[in-house]
Amino acid sequence: DAELITAGSGVTVESHQVLGSTNQHLLDKAALLHKGHSCFAEYQTAGRGRRGKKWESPYGAHLYTSTYWSLDAGIQAASGLSLVIGIAVARTLTDLGIANTQLKWPNDVYVDGKKIAGVLVEIIATAGGECHLVIGLGLNVNMPLQAGLEIDQAWTDINQQLPHAIDRNALASRYLTHLIKVLTDFESFGFGHFVEEWNCCDAFRDSPVVLTIGNNKKYGIAKGIDHSGALLLEMDGVISPYVGGEVSLRHA
Ligand code: ATP
Ligand code: BTN
Image 1 (tube, rainbow, N blue to C red):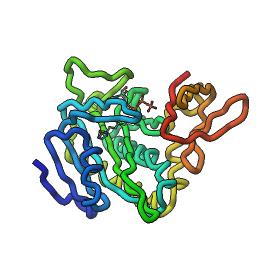
Image 2 (cartoon, rainbow, N blue to C red):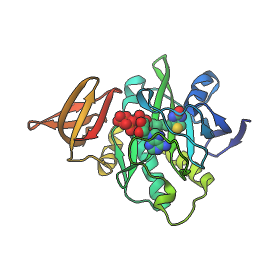
Image 3 (cartoon, helix red, strand yellow):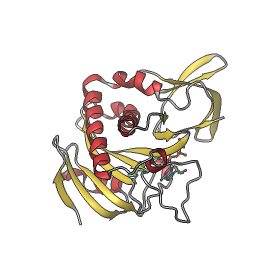
Image 4 (cartoon, rainbow, N blue to C red):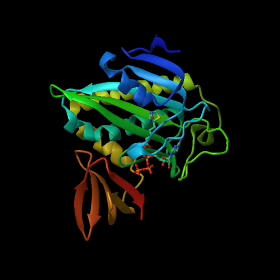
């Protein structure tokens, strides 16, 4: 059921009724892909978040999408990537008229303090200094009121935020356009280009937070991100940077 269409700017798109996970789909066929190739599914049977968490992916006119990319700068450059993708999502929502989009380090998008989208960057491989990866986005558009959704935090969707319905194809193409723009700017100018914009959208700026690193909890005040995308945490008047895929941030 995969159909290839050209979405402009060299991006190709395949769309599916159902996939286990759009990220997994591209991970499985990575060797065959070119930069910007993207896939969409109407629903996912095994949508995933970070650290084995589930991404609820009902059939309900959401966006479940993944894009293949590679970075010449290698794996160390990939650390700021989910933050940059968050900016692409924030710009997309701003275009729709949703102004108060906020970003939670490292990979979540909130509106009104409720989660509207999640980003999952997965590394496929590093070869010859290049880092091959898949960028996944789950964006809630119109959550069906069905029983059995397991979302243990406040969530929202585009429909709740706007007084009118939106064109999902236009949404998808806008996201892809912003995505390719941030990715190419990220490659040209580095993460530093995005720090100010990210900090302006920071959902946790100057808030008391708890940072969980494995079994270890650190309490402090969130102070935004530094030039490399590391989270800045102030404890006892000292600000220290934190990085890493196993770090989870909550309001204290
Ligand atoms: P962190 O990664 O910092 O611990 P998190 O708890 O939000 O943050 P993630 O892995 O980023 O964890 O996202 C998965 C979580 O997102 C799930 O545990 C659930 O709480 C929530 N979630 C799952 N599906 C959806 C959805 N469709 N819309 C909004 N939130 C969702
Ligand atoms: C998170 O908040 O932890 C990230 C959730 C990412 C969900 C998207 S939906 C499309 C892509 N395929 C997946 O299995 N996950 C991502």
